[in-house]
Image (cartoon, rainbow, N blue to C red; front, side, top):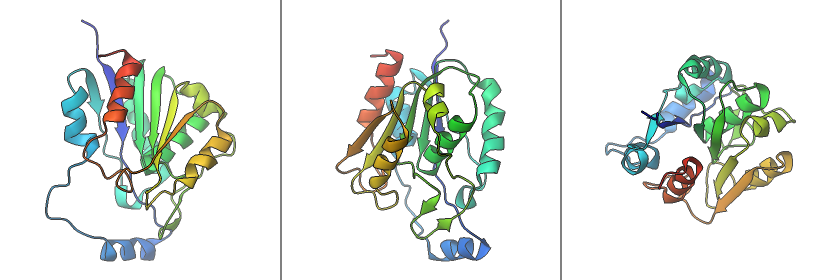
Length: 206
């Protein structure tokens, strides 16, 4: 029986320059009683869950993230991943994949990599610079690890500015960079048909 193509999704997160900064974030962030519907959960399961094996690791200390911690956790999954893998990184998860794949030769063949609203550096509005997510200047290994590399941004993003698309474009030679007019800010959307179509095309699934 043919095994399903795996989709490995790394969620977003926050960085803080120190504990005081982190506590300020906890005190000022909004809370929601209702369940927030996001495209990477039930929507993705419903659209391609039968055709793909979707893996969603819970990265450590999501709200006070450190690259070194995420790297350790990510590498624990690598032995269970197969060739022809699809990687998806969202926001901080996007810069994590960009950094990891630009610094490490990946041992499995990657079918495609999608970086969705990835910050170009570890500086996010109001959060300071921290966490160790800073990219190297040379990103060539990122493209060698994933010949099909797609970066997705939105002009109305209020967290990661669309100008970061140009910053990535200046460092990458062959990546496809797409900037949407409106994805409800920081891709706070309940459906993402464009991504579904691209992933299906990658795996040649109708």
